Length: 107
Image (cartoon, rainbow, N blue to C red):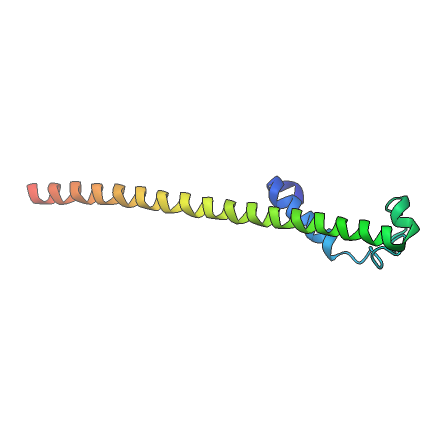
């Protein structure tokens, strides 16, 4: 199903799954629960591992914020487009009503 979504929405959902995953273990304390190492510094643990883990989390939070902003902008663009379409259709309706009134008046 995910392949049918727009790329921006698909990446947003993917990042949400990553953020909700409980595979990290305690940040900066070596390998996570899933068995993945995450790099030699992170595997070693200690203050360097904690710093790297914190930088990674900040990176992903920034990415998530960028994706949310892009999604909000996309929704706003869609709303603006739909409003313009409604206005266009309303003008079309009004134009046809005028023609109908003229035809009725001519009869």
